[in-house]
Image (cartoon, rainbow, N blue to C red; front, side):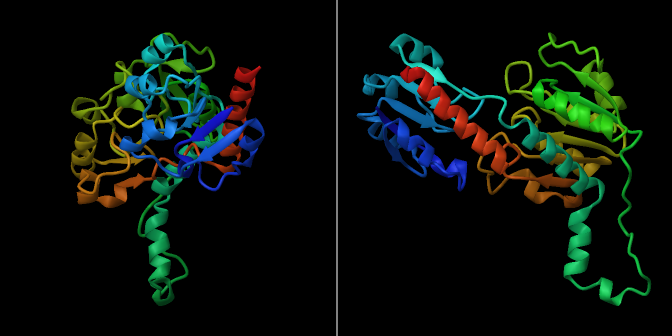
Length: 308
């Protein structure tokens, strides 16, 4: 069996030798749009994280039997074309629940505690010149007793809700599909969640129901001091509207995902008048060492099951 991995760089420094026992493996760190078809040539199995696999790629490579997506989302593969071509498509799920949940709180505490400001205060040796033992120029708050709204109560959303409860938060949620009913947590409308919650975290997929779910009107509904975090998908929040809101409203925002990735050099988040209200991480929430090891193990298992 001949296997090609198209974007190994997206897996960081993970041990990829586990694939060697499955067949003849070719690894590329990155793959540009124009390189995909030629790199698929002669291979039975392709492993891709974000590289697009289109109907044309499949038509040009009739030997292809299995597409393994090293992620949960399947929007980078033409599933209809794969089905018509008789190509099996396998993704992985459940590998990043703890990683994303932990990252949610990491982003939250960066905003709540204004750690960037205080770290810079120390780095510039300003504390050395302080007339007193402490410096609390930027106030911070406890999250105990705060109302936390979860948008998208899947596995990750549920874990975040559990952790928020452990911190003493009152948790409610909004189901983006309308089908998720959890007895443990109070279900509310989107309007109620936005207007009543102190902390809002998004853990939903990007689809017709969630695209631009949070726009100008929704941002105007937020209560003063509200924190909005997106750990779901870019495109759920209107980023231009969010940038304007961060400069005109008393709100805060943290996100690990953007509508276009990598981030554009002219992104409106680079021009904020109040940059302390924003934290952005480069789509890392899913990628703890443990999560990546689990993900790769699941990809290996998918290939083994297909081979059997």
